[in-house]
Image 1 (tube, rainbow, N blue to C red):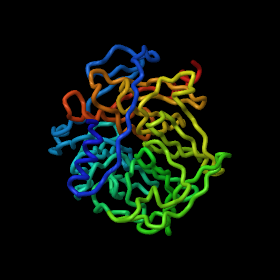
Image 2 (cartoon, rainbow, N blue to C red):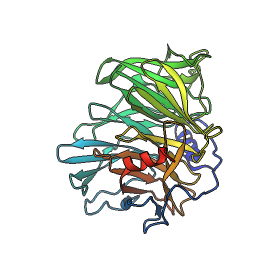
Image 3 (spheres, rainbow, N blue to C red):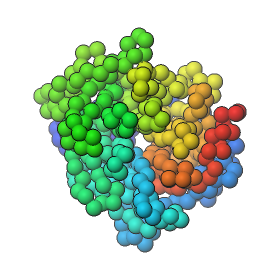
Image 4 (cartoon, rainbow, N blue to C red):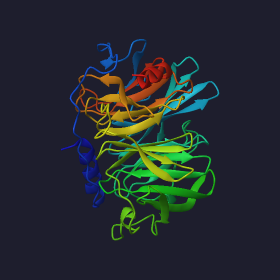
Length: 382
């Protein structure tokens, strides 16, 4: 059984509720990649000039911090601090939660801590807010969004106004002051949340998207964002709402919202100003279909998109503006795992990510340092 499906069914058994079904993925046969070198000592194939290190392993202490790293590391993000930055990472386990690694300006780990210890289930992905909090999303039928402080100083808060459903990820549009949410179901919706007051997610309006034949997006209110066992689920409350084949990662960048759907291996592009939806990458039609099993997504400081694979070749793949795909790195010997939580440090020269189950079922969190902007320019000119 697929491990993510097992987690969902475990959550279902604990609560006597029904969860969503997992979606399959057809891996791409491993290829030579784009200037990827033989595996380094950490089992990563990287381009020339890139280096890796292991930061944390599940059920092991993080360095000399005394903090034990969580199981099933998943979605993540980076938050600047006065003297460095913090990388947060979800735990898509049972129970779930969120851990954090704190770095100084030289990139050394100086602290590690939990920032969400309440009983949560299958914390999959999420999203960072412009006001410096992490939105951790539970991926099960009545999953919630939790707003967390990366420093751990403030207690996490449930944000029920953002709906209870198979949450995957969140992206924040600070210009129009709205949030977009994906739903990891074969018939999941794309949602928009408009808070009543900016930077306060305790109340607001949740809507589902309908995409017409001209690719124009309209939004219709979800009547009951917090359904119970006996109510209609959020994704079925809006007649005619457009369904997507397994919504995964989502990111806002430069007036566009990009999100992935694993059931059809697509990267979508929502023009936030025009409210028009197009496809940035489609494995079925791309002239470089080197990306399969699409999952978490992030944007580089130069606007490049990076998509993590849930299985397949176990690659992190750059998707260029023309719909081409170029592997940035490949994890070797961990075919039963998935790449999760890619996020850049404030300089754009370091990326953090995890192999959720590693070689033995225990997750590994990595850092890769290199000239990402130069790599992106070279990839586009291929």
